Length: 174
Image (cartoon, rainbow, N blue to C red; front, side, top):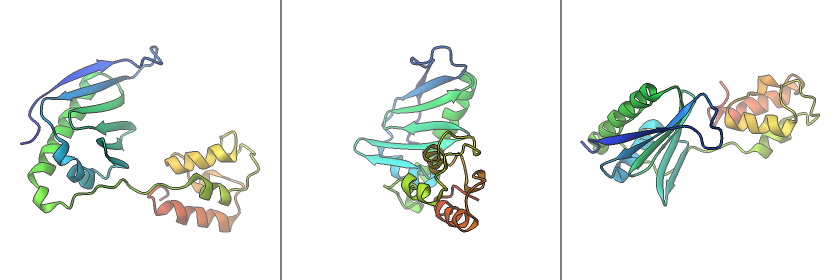
C-alpha cells in the first residue's frame, strides 16, 4: 500500500466566498509521486505534467488534481462528499500501485482539440442561437466538451459532420 493516511482541509473559494460549493485539499502523509504515471494510465488524466509532477482529470463535474503530497478537488457539496472522493481516490492510487507491473505508465495527457480548428468549421456569424455570445466562445465550449456540433443550428451539414469527426477523436462528441 502506497497511500495510508492523509488529512483533509475543507475551504470556501477566496475569490467567491458566497459560493455554495466548497473545495478540499487532502494533505498526504506519504509521497505518491511514483504512482502518478500509472494512475494517469488508469484514470486517463487530461493533463499530466512531469515537472512538477501532477495529474489532473475531471470526474462528475469536479476537477481533481493529484500531486505527490496533495490532492485538490473543487465544486464539492460538503465535507462528506469530499471524504468519499478522497477515499475512492486512495483506493485507486493503491490499486494502481499494486498492479503497476500490469499497467503501462503514461507520461502524457490526452490530446486536446484546437479551438481554431473548430472555429474554421463554424459559420462565424455570431448569431447566438447556440446560446453563446460568439462563434469563438462556442468553439471554446466545444473544445472543453461542454457543447457539441449539434448545438449550432446554422452550421452547414458537411461542416457539422467534419466537426463531429474532428471532436470524436478527442471523445468530445458522441
